[in-house]
Image: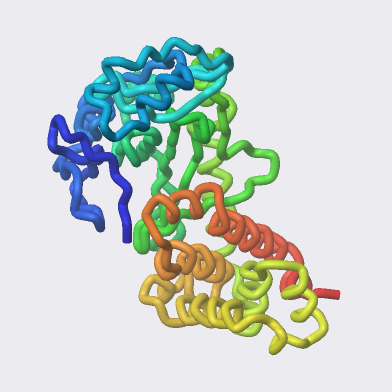
Length: 360
């Protein structure tokens, strides 16, 4: 599996750090204690700045020289004197590498600003634990995960609460801040649609991006409300029994890729669905009924276990071409959509029982 971690040739280090546990790729710095934000940014190789610079092109005659394999020192002869209007490049100042091409309205948000925002959530970072951070590609995208002081307990299950922050310097992605509960026993991210609660926000790289970051704490309601809501919901689900047939139907509905698949389920023509879909459903059911993390009294045969079966499959069984693709899928992509679907189905089941899974 590809990792796509940024490698700094000047320092000879990959831009990544992790606390205590060695990552699957075996790269980056592994440290024994949780660092401060100032330490974390250095361990992760994120202590670089990005500048927005004018974008130029060359004249047609210079372009001919540029493409002449016999021309010596053509870079010295070319005069990049044609300014491209309304276009800029973003450049790492430590390596002079171009990270992307952006427009007039794009505003650089430095890596250090993301750390400063996180520190502000729990009063100067007190109680905030920086667990991983790093950069992808040549530094055009960064990510940070921090563990919050609160946690959720469901029976013997402990669920730690995290903030996940990702930003880019290439103009392709917004700044994303997400509240992410993670079930310790299987490293399972439990993204959930909490009605009107805001559990994730996206901020565009415009002139007021820093001000919006400062407001993100209020928008997320991160300190207590989301954690308390999930605590109540997950504990309720752990007391609701669900039989194997209803687990199968819930999994089928959560994993259904399109309306045609759902229609086939509705009219009793499951055999018409794709082999890929049926194999994935069987894999989720195998996870639900036999995986060691699904055997606890609060998990086995419960609605809580059914929800974990879907999300656990998406993160611990499903194969991805790269760690970056897995990250994107879990946080904003297909795995996220499946998790949201499973959460809504479980919420409806908790209210209406098996009736919620009928396709009338």
